[in-house]
Length: 317
Image (tube, rainbow, N blue to C red):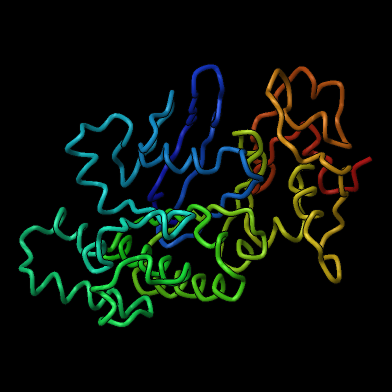
């Protein structure tokens, strides 16, 4: 396996006395798609923004192509931004309403490729619009003239025009109709095939995650509780929270023998001590109240933060 493109180590983000992300470590390899799943408020978006230094982490390291972004000077970080792009959840809100879509897509070129002539820049904008399924004639229109799906294509075009190494998709399809979601997912897969970029795909839509990811990371209250290859995780979820997430999705026929929790049991709470999920876990032990389980590797490529992970391959009781 090649060297990681992105290495995150012991990342923590605090907002005052509240901890949004705690002790997160993972790697992302070239050409790989890693999905980050969890319910709303679990810290997924905060983690993405901390990686990009859109919010400042409290501690940890984020190495991108061998450079620690958290220790980099402003000029070094700015130079790396062309390789680190993000697509946001709300496609219309992420576009400047006073800029035409052509200007929005061309703005990164003005910043990072100032040597381009206006004609060369226009050609790149046109080619990118066509690549995402939009006609070149639409470059002079404004965001409010487009549908949500079209605005998301424009956002993807703006992110991809520089040819980034890593694209972070923060709930990039959650606000779109199901039929449009499929089109955007296919577009992202095509762009990844063409460019070889890596993706960190943040979502709570498990069907979408299953379609496009190579590995899946499950987050609960700011902490990773399970990391596994996509097929392995959906075939045999090991952490009780992962089982509960999969059990909450209607399946015909059921793909996994998940144990559903009681109504409202997935709602997050405050972290006092021990395992954050213990009060909602049907398998909790007395140990869970006093000791926070580490994210241990129990098999090659399989990590679980659970005191009963050694029992996970047999039915728990």
